[in-house]
Length: 389
Length: 77
Ligand SMILES: [Zn+2]
Image (cartoon, rainbow over all chains, first blue to last red; front, top):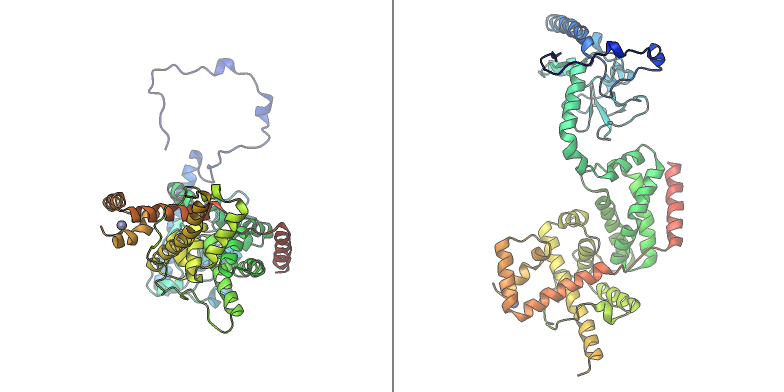
């Protein structure tokens, strides 16, 4: 809608007097449009749009009447020109309840021919039968083509099953999509972890993206593996296996958890398997030795020096810390490693270990208390040695 | 609050997942109980000393081997 702007008292600038013919004005190199002025967005296209909508309405009415009277799927007249979507063979082959999921071009991105993901959210576009949606705005059916102004969401088969017929003019769909995106983007932007984009790229075959993920998490995975297995060679083998497995099973990562937690979970499983292999005569599990009450009641009440780093040199301190954590049962060691060394949350630790949150909390308390007790011996002893009474 | 109650709240205390009333109770207990005060401070140091000292790190030699092996497999796929 146009608004009159003549109601102000300000004098209008007189443009006519200052008119100098601009040589570039006669033949502009290209037409520059504001980025959001998509097709049919300009005000001078308004009548055309109304006409298109009227035409559409007639089309839809005729189609619905024909469909209702003759049960003819005249729908095909309106089929989206996208061959993937309108290919009746592939549609018939797929069961209605489990529509095939294709990755499609983002109809709104500037180079729709190459883009595999939604330009706003970097999420893959997904086709459910006739619907093409990005993962977030899955309620809005969108025809992939910019040419065809109509998108009908309900297939004849679904209509026969009693689903509501639903049609939408493409322009409205575009603007609904954009408004929705603008509204949710701010909240989504912080939640979508940068890893998700890397994972999507890796899924599409970009090995460099996977290498970057590997660089980000190889140290963490190695530390987790070495803390559980207490063996460098095993930890190296496990680290390699984790990334090979992760690449193989990348499609299974749905983004419901952090990518790092997913990797840690693979690493924990591989490490426990390795421990079992090494000790063939007995089983090793997360539950081993955790029922012992040893160390859960504090016995040592001597205060330490505030900084053990000041008493020991780096090598000595490292040895003490390694020796001390080695002495913990694997079930405690693993929880302490994930929670306190790798800084996972209680929930993430529970997820990575397949334990309940209360179980993680209880193991963490006992792991911390046992470590404290064991370290007290070293640090208190050292204190006595350095301060002979 | 008894010493056993104090111990059962220790994990939540370190995770900052404790109500302000319980926090007050924990503080009141440690102010009056020398043993629990020591347990609290030395447990805090235990966590801190493990956080501050990275015990294991991968060697550059292994890192190169890892990248070569994994990337070779990725490109095969
Ligand atoms: Zn006490």
